[in-house]
Image (cartoon, rainbow, N blue to C red; front, side, top):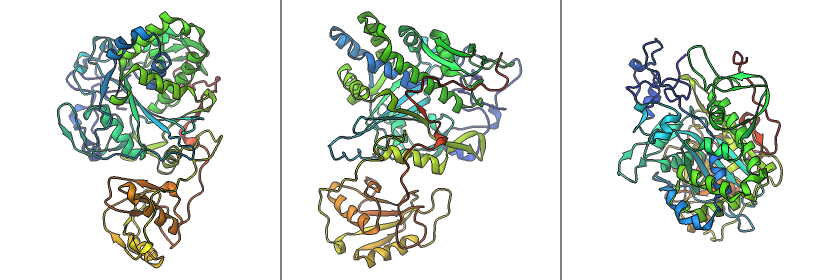
Length: 540
């Protein structure tokens, strides 16, 4: 079976950059990675093999550490500030507006955590990869969206498996001006190499329709020091495990059944293990990273040794050198302020999930978002609904302060977006709903032939002075106000008739979910007895 050349337990041919070596479908070529059948990985003994493999780890692990230690030592302030690398937040052409504040004036907070597999420092190279990796564009092999609710009562974390095939929007490198064209389908981790972390942010906003406030990107060279500094992180396995194959693959992790405090090289092995956990896929590795992250958060909150100023300075020094953030987050003070927002959330209200995916029919080694379950999960995050099923179901709908014009003065463009969720578009659907609107007094409603696809019926408006008009249209049709949003992709009030309204004249809103779908592999922050299942054939 072939594997990706950037797999931490696979082989990276010396003559190639970190590309997927197997011949892929035309869709993947169109996604921005050129592949030919002549670059399949060789399996004979003459094939060059790096002694180290690429590390996979949890971006949030290191990020939580920097947040927890960001206030250490005022005299160290400017020195630590100089350690932090900064870059532009969003490299895409369009943006998603920030969420509307709730009734108390509170706004959700969304931070994208990115783990880079860069091999451009001697320390990173020593931890994994080959010399041929030096200088190649990095890949975003760990991506996690951290959503802190508006009232700071709960936190949701959504991970995206790196093997997921998704659209990547056009991005412009802020340093060179080079324009990377949009890809209709590409490997999720390719986004980072298209101008930097701001392209990964643009990709997430395009995929989720969630506004990203900040990004934090880390490489993996400091993770050993972090695990050591807090005295190890407790992890658990259901059986003895040894991540090792007869042909030399595997992280090398070897643990006895039960709980072990891992640190140093063993912590790295846990975070990059694929072969040996669950079904041996990248999904199992993501779940192991969630367990590690949960345990580290608890250690940081409970471990008294972190009150030692020397320990905290050491942690801050290591973490800031490994950290790259957006320009608006580039000081210790701003990181500390962010940490204070994170700390308001009780550990038991942290919910970690993985975006539900299914095997891609064109390549079983790749994934695509599961249409219904992934949209359920993302819609809950967009609506600021707690994923753990506790607390308020979602924020109250906010009416616009902008008064609406008279119904017969509101110009509405109606688009047919019913060709979503794997279904063919319903013919003439935009014209039918335009007539429905005209019958309700919106005489300026017209059909728009622009291509569109939406799972849920949505009303878009380009500027604040049209928000009231858009909400008036929504009210007339029975569309919930949370499905009305600002978008720079339209020039006026635009109704996109989604896949949830394929028939009939009256819109019926679907029942709102109260918890994340089970396919999201939910793990709660207060679950201390979580244990990784072991893949058959990897016990000892």
